[in-house]
Image (tube, rainbow, N blue to C red; front, side, top):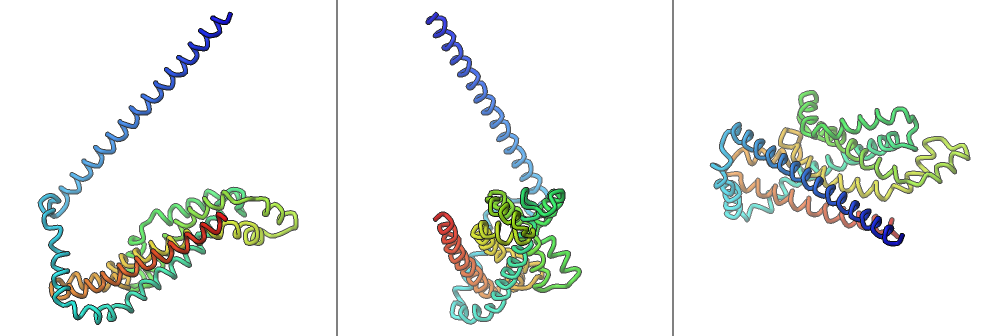
Length: 291
């Protein structure tokens, strides 16, 4: 009997091992096929884009450093004028930061409501959860530059279209991230507030927001960093700020490359500064929450 049981156990172990190895090989095969398909799509997409481009990528690759070299050489020749140029374009930098700050604030408020209305167990109207989630998906799926171009056509150029475009995209992105945080919130405080007759707004404000506030602020600061870059990019389509000045200096060509260099210095220094400041505060919020 003992021999029979031992042989049966050995066969069971062999069957489990063979089944496991078959699954591993199947996963490796599927992984290899997916990688092959990805490579084929990447190569074919690159070739199609290169064929449709005004100039060949490989033919112009050797010229990739020509423009930076021209900017740096002219900026070095006129390096004495850089402080004055930095002071000249500082108001445009302030406008860019203001666009990012206001759009982040508005987007964070919108994301807060979208997250609370689209989270299971917290939503005021549970049947409308899919609707609010689809709204959030649409808001973050459309690029800021597309929204800005439409708004510029309606409202004209300036910082307002950029602010609205970035705020819409920010609300959709933060709504998704905020919702994932809210799903992990402890519902016991909410249940306690329900027993006291608290309204939905009171339950969210007193039972949920204090739990998720550190993560919400951390995500909002991270989004603020992204929005500074986005506001600078939108300036290229006439949305004002530092990007608008950079586009003009780059379009003018030689003779104003020193202005482009000054704007690059301003933009780079601002991004690094806010990255460091927001990273520091995000780390404090995360450590404080962990403690």
